Amino acid sequence: MLKRIETYYDTVPRSSARAEEFGPLTLFVREGEGWPFYARPAPGHEGEVPVAAVERVRARQRELGAPEAFEWVAETAPGLRAAVEASGLAVHEHPLMVLEGPGLAVPEPGGATVRMVDAGDPGLESAVAAPYAAFGFPPEPGVAGRTAERITAGLTRLAAAFDDTEGGTRRSVALAAGQYQPVGDVAEVVGVGTVPAARRRGLGLAVTAALVADARARGAELVFLSASDADVARLYGRLGFRTVATALIAEA
Image (cartoon, rainbow, N blue to C red; front, side, top):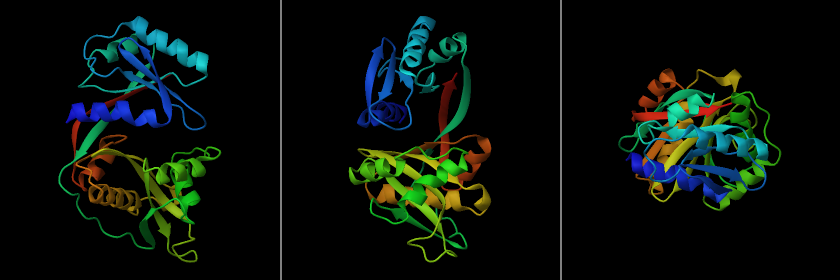
């Protein structure tokens, strides 16, 4: 299972980034506009990672004006954490969770309608903006258009919870949204967020359930995600996800 996830992690950035190899590490460099990528272990590397390799990658990231960021799975690259920490970066742990079974049903949230959002949906821009508001960032310029392109290309699937009280579901405001990125029969749920004023209504969980149902219907056999912390992991547990490993993120 973890090897399949590793293959996924190496594959999914390549649709919008080029890969630069630094021995035991691969740095993904975004092609065009959008959120910058990170470095991670090269495919198949399971041994120790020299601190010098981490520092070479960090120097390249600074040269590119990209964040000095690394992402990996603790259990599949146990030799990386010590090198990253020795280079001066702090490492943050997140539960890596895999869905067991088809996914459990959750109650439909009151006052909102949850649906998949396609590239021509009038609610697309609002749906794309909701997670940015949830995490306290302004939307990137052009992100709605890039998301529409990825949906059309089959690289992204988007779901959102829309406010039923604002003029009908086709043009109402998205209160929560999230995506999954399919690669073959593997899909990762990412970027699920609820705007601050609509929290504690089960909207994020309902959006995740919609993404899971869509992924399963489209043939995904392995569906996984990273929870921000143990409390959020317990919420995802209500959908049938269980923790199988630890996702690690390091940033300057």
